[in-house]
Image 1 (spheres, rainbow, N blue to C red):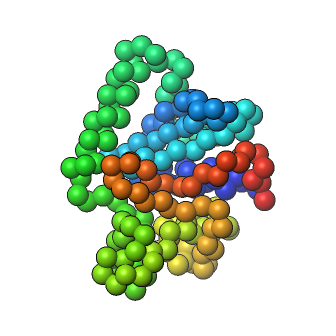
Image 2: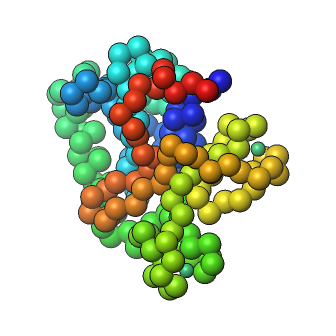
Image 3: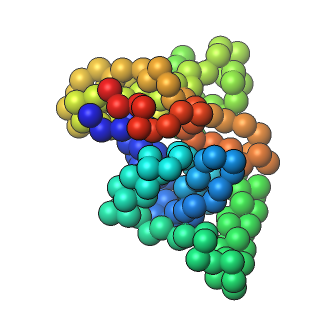
Length: 180
Ligand SMILES: [Zn+2]
Ligand SMILES: [Zn+2]
């Protein structure tokens, strides 16, 4: 069975049109792979062999920029470009929203709808037949028409734009343990 977390990550990259990933930043035991768009920052992390298998998989579809290789000018360039992208977020009033209020059908950027006050659904939807993830507001799979399942593990997280944190929630588990 395909690893769910990786599917989420790849799908979100596709939705957000992210093609380059910063690979290998270390924090404690975890190694990170991070993607930046003009409006979003998403990441996936794992340890040891699990991390290596993620890298191998992502290599097919993305340009991976290894942070170990770039403690030089190229690293500075990368960080600069990330900085610029993040700065754009503050100016960008039309951020991509993956959540919306079920009742009002308006994009939502917080925990509650700004029009009706209802709690916003933030759990991602998944079609297990197509291995495709969808925004929380989606009901049916666009490929096969089946009703989507609600993910029990992952959700779309919105925080204040200044925190630059969007994307999938990543529990502190090794991806190798997540196979269904
Ligand atoms: Zn509403
Ligand atoms: Zn489907």
